[in-house]
View (spheres, rainbow, N blue to C red):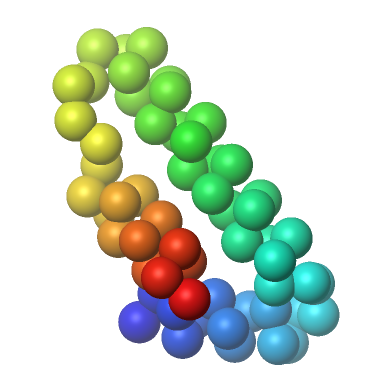
Amino acid sequence: MVRRRFDLLTEVLGPDRARATGWTLGRLLQTSLWDIDDGKTALAPSSVAVAKSLLNR
């Protein structure tokens, strides 16, 4: 479902998919670093799912 929504988003809005993928992965990394700073010791399952979906293209 993540990949489908991502594809729809990039198709409708028109950004380069590689650039949109990089931006999304960067935001996931930033969010994960904030979580670590807040004391969390595991990655959010939703972040892992999105990253895996985008990296397995």
